[in-house]
Structure formats: structure tokens, C-alpha cells
Image (tube, rainbow, N blue to C red):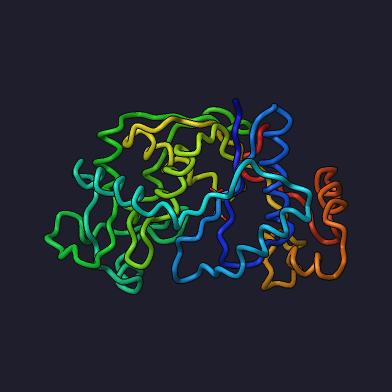
Length: 281
Ligand code: GLU
């Protein structure tokens, strides 16, 4: 049976782009007789705001979306992430790093999908692990996993290229696990068979596929959908004036009508759907 999920991070109010992402996940599951789950990615202690969780649940209900069972909270799963981290350490694939952002920026010579590539400063060094972040030795991990591929429903078969990201942080100083590790473990734990998310996270799936191979997790299919963008082509963002779903709800707008419009590809003035770099031909 197909199972999808919507996985918001409660570090900002949801806006129309989130509504679109939630509808894609929900509707793909429903259309195929499957289940739609809700996961709250609330482990970024520095940015996560608990008061936004209730708002998010109310926004989704206002759109007319129903999810299976209780929402999953990442904050309740820290032991799982730590266990997986220990397994990767035992495989010799993680190393501690104490570099600051400024040091990395000064030493970096290349960029990856998330910004500057870590130049490998701490790899092979005897770094005090106490309070350090743990990075994956990407080259060693790729050697260990061997060649991998994965399938996006819109873009087709992809050869996994996690090397694009370099030695990513998987266990962070200020948060128990990185997005990549926590999301990959959760999708497996919850039996998610179709991972849907915006095309801006397409490249992340290369890393998730690698982690699945290293940790012996089941491999889902992916569906990276287009993004709602403003007239200048940039993603919607509340800070640039895009009203939040909560604002619209409090202003008395009809959430179900908004959901119907988004499904039909009718967007408010100035907003359009960018198919995403990786759309099917
Ligand atoms: N919490 C992530 C976000 O809001 C979820 C991405 C995903 O669906 O994997 O961008």
C-alpha cells in the first residue's frame, strides 16, 4: 500500500507553498487508495517554535486535509537518531568536527546544493568528540555502499550522486540529528513508500538514498513536485509578504476553496507553479 507524508518544520508559519506540498502528498495517497501521514520536524532547537505546531494542525484541518493516526513528532524519536549515529560511527563513516562556519567559509573552495562544501579540515584529524558535530566521510561511505540509484516519479531513474554534498554533518551540536538523517530514518520507520516534497529538495534524495543503503533501510519512490513562486521566480516566503495560512484563516478565507483552487492550478495573482528543474520531459 502506498503511504505518503507531509513533514513541516515548525520554524515559521505555513504559507500557500506548504499547502500545495501537503495537498500533493495527501492527494497522491488518496488517489491510489493509500495513507497520508503527518510528521512534525521539531528537532531544530534553535529555530523550532512549539506554538506553531497547533497552528499548523489547524491550518491543515482548515484546508480539509486529514491524516492517518496521530502526528509523529521527531522530538519523540531522538534515541533512534542517536542509535543510527552510533551505527554509522561503528562503521567508521563519521568523524567529529569542531570547525566554525567562519572557518569553513574561509577554507572552502567549492559549493554544493546547500552552500559551501566542507573542505574536509577535520577528516583524519584527532579531534575531541565532546560537543563536536559528526560529519560523514562521504568518499568512504560511497565506497562502502557501492553504486546506487533511485526513482523519482516525474524525473525518472537517477544515479545517486551524494558526493555533491561532500562531508555533511549528520549529528549536530545544537540538534540531535540533521534533517537528512532524521527524515530518512522516519520515512523508513513509518513505512513511507512515496516521499513527496518540493523540487528544491531534489538533490537531498541522493544523500537519503545513500543513508538507506548504509543503514539497511527500505527504499521508497520519490515525487519531487514543482514549487509555488512569486513573480520574480523566488519561492514564496512570508518575510516577502506572502500571507501565512493562519493569516488567511483568521481573515475568514475558506480553506477548502483555497485547496480546490490549488488543485486546479489556480493561484493568487503574482504566484505561479514553477515545474522544478527536474520535471519530466
Ligand atoms: N521539514 C522539511 C521541510 O519543511 C521536510 C522536507 C521533506 O519533506 O523531506 O522542508
